[in-house]
Length: 561
Image (cartoon, rainbow, N blue to C red; front, side, top):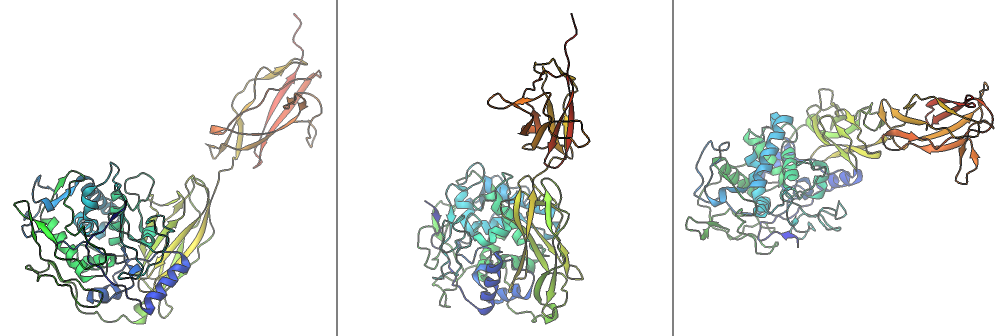
């Protein structure tokens, strides 16, 4: 049984012409929406505007509205040296906490300018899933049962039709937010990560989900040590000022101090037993005596535009998001389109770098090059090809001429086609895609693995076998087709009608065989037999690529005793 959400704040979906155009553009390209960037759109959200549901990581799914207890850990500066014990609410399950901190370290090495704090991931994880339902994960960090949000069917929530065929959320009609960090499938398709190195990108795995959330929050040129950038990042995750206040409250709470607790023993959200379609009532929080007491909550907006009957908060919000719109950008400052800037054919041999890289140009509303535009490049499909650094998703910023080039792409061992996508823009996203192909290695060399002289008496068999090995640039190539032919010594060799021969399945003489190399490119030929004619003969072995090697075979009578 999938773990479902209980009493949670919900948010209605608002459909606008701009949102419809954005969804249509993404559906046509089969690319997921890009996250909010540091644009006017992000600021409008902070001011109270309601973008389309699928422009947020969670699809604006509902979330837990519990606030931290009033008796905070009150231990400034303990985010590194964590206390061993403390308030139950301050405890974070071991695997979950490790995933947050590992994601922070990864981002510090690949996007240091973002300055992602792990406490922000912990705050989002708290309101999205109650730290993976109190840390109910297995040894690999995968939730013991799926954590699914409600169907985003437009009935009190955003309307997002199925984008993954139910692969992640089990729903082939509408999308649902999935996993401990509650990604909708279309966003996971672009931002999903392999945080635990098991070769899979699983939104139900806390390591994968935490790293993906970190990269999503760091999109573009955000610096999360700047309050405005942090607010925009959180709002890009769920477009709600109440959501921002709730996340900010937990963020500040965890910065004051927290500690590790065993997996499965974390404090569950108080709102776990009601309907997913009703506004969240007043949550409860632990008291020092072990019971529960009402905890003040913000008054979430209801689908009708009013507020729920929640008590007035006894403490002010930790932070207040922007309440005024910035000046509307001019057409020369507004993203308009994304075009191919000369990308060549994307083909490479397995294990080698592609000779071409994807290059795109961002343009403004006037059709002129637009600098400082975030473009996300992603690899789509079952491929093990990777960008430089082993990444499958990379976000870069256009230069002064509006262009940006994806990192060098290196083919893996899996052959066949896959897609490379580029997505830019937020309110009106634009996406491009290219087909890339990885071809199998084709042997360019075939060589003997021994140097024995092969001789036989007339009518006898050769005692030694012929052994060869096929390689491509020094790397062994298995499954290489090899043709072995006994040839004449004429200027234009042909199959010889006398001399040494092989035997077919019926024991009849044949002088041409089609063979295939095995593991490590090795091939041992079948036994060779001599007829009654003495002399020196030639065996030629050839691959499909034209690589050739010849072997000398001598048929001579044994010396007299």
